Amino acid sequence: QSTSPAPSASDAPLAEQLVNALNSAFGQHPDTRAVHAKGIVLTGEFVPSSAAQTVSKADFLQKDTGQIPITVRFSNFAGLLDVADNDPNLASPRGMAIKFEMKDGSSADIVSHSVNGFPAKTGAEFRDLFFAIGASGPNAQKPTPLDKFLDGHPAAKTFLTSVKPAPASYGTLPYFGVNAFKFTNARGDAVYGRYQIVPIAGEHYLTDDQRAKSAEDYLHSEMAERLKSGPVKFRLLLQIANAGDPIADPTRPWPDSRKLINLGEIQVSKLAPDSLVAQRDLLFVPDNVPDGIEPADPMISERSGAYAVSYGRRHQ
Ligand code: HEM
Image (cartoon, rainbow, N blue to C red; front, side, top):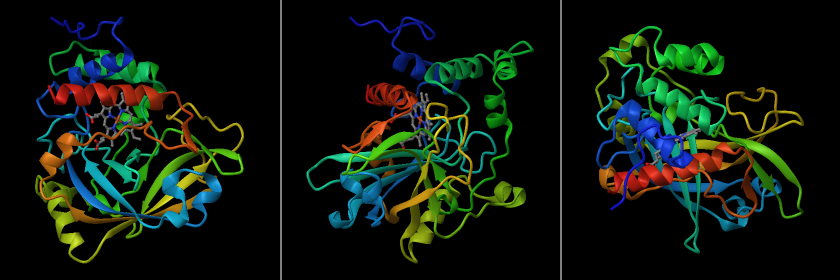
């Protein structure tokens, strides 16, 4: 008979601790991701640019590969399936996860969200933040564990207290990969980069009044409506680090002046017939990358361990 570690046991593997920490904040629910639980699944294509192969020999970035089928999942933030799309706190940041499906059966994933930054520098810090959130319910004594955590972690405080306006559409938000990867081209030249995904329709947000009046599932119905007039398009960009830019600290965005390389166009064209069924089987893993791309920020493998644990728990 197997025994589960106590919720905050420090001798459990970090991946388990991370999911325990998320579960302490949101609860553990059947068939539900520990975080980014409510989402919609779509299919589409990625068309690599001719510049992409100058950055990396990764198979999905080669122009001569042609159009690559993709599966995309947009999501709200919280680990709760019933969070309203217009919830002012629990729905943001929004997520965009992409799976590039190669002809040989292999795949590559990008898992991004709608803020250029992160509240924690490392996996351990993320765990401590979420255990603090879990222990700071309405009946917690002041100062709460979260108050204390935020006092010592200014980046987390800024992230949690910054206003994140509700999007008009999942298709009118920019998304950011946040963690840095190393990209190597066929000549062996390497750069560090972070993904940025920019909506071709521009960025559009709701006013507070529009948000308050919008329906609980407005992002789903809006997407169905939007797709009637054609694919929803994004530009996949790579922001290139200058020497000295922080590679292993996602709380620190790189300056906007850094070089951006256009890697290609993402076209999201169709909603999956049954998102709930499709998303159950889907697992996006941040370190699922082909030859030519390597995780550079240690958080990428910490994340990947946690995603696998969450997948296991939601299939129990
Ligand atoms: C240590 C840091 C992090 C931890 C522990 C963590 C943990 C998780 C877990 C457990 C899941 C659920 C996976 C599943 O059940 O399939 C998840 C999903 C997700 N995470 Fe993270 N995450 C971290 C950092 C990030 C960052 C930096 C981003 C954005 C750049 C991000 C964006 C997302 C998105 C969009 C999803 C939903 C993926 C999907 O649609 O299946 N996470 N995360």
